[in-house]
Image 1 (cartoon, rainbow, N blue to C red):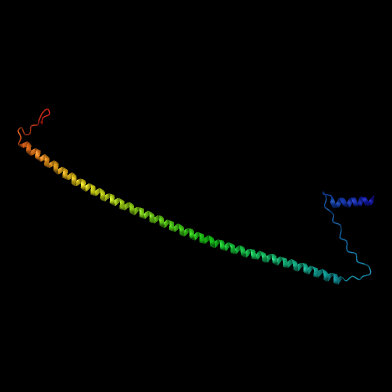
Image 2: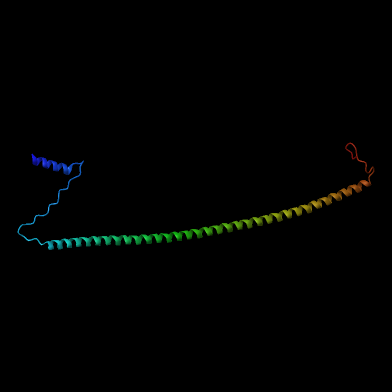
Amino acid sequence: SSISEGTLLTGCLLFCPLSRPVVPPLIPPKIPEGERVDFDDIHRKRMEKDLLELQTLIDVHFEQRKKEEEELVALKERIERRRAERAEQQRFRTEKERERQAKLAEEKMRKEEEEAKKRAEDDAKKKKVLSNMGAHFGGYLVKINVLYNRISHAQKFRKGAGKGRVGGRWK
């Protein structure tokens, strides 16, 4: 019963979810009797094994570091290349915008020149029409004056000059 209780107690300690698992104490390896143990040899082998393990860890570390350095260099190159591309794109866009602004200014000036030319032509046409109308109207006034003078002159010689008709007749 004491063996089963001990086993049960140990099992409970190792697998109980509420308590921490108990780690069994380390048992030193059994050394055969009669053979002489060379502790210097064991220590030397242990040191060689540790040295080998340390060298592999160092090699892995430096390989990893070399990879990371290469990745960093590649990243820096990519960043610089992207910056150069962006600068080129910005310069190209600025140049295009400048050309567009120049075209707009040129178009605006051309339209203003056309409008000024059209206004000048319209003003010339108006002046010509007004001068022609003035000449014709002046000629019309002269004709009216000539006719008025003729009528006045003819009425002087008629009987009852100066008296108009009455009732459908001149007064």
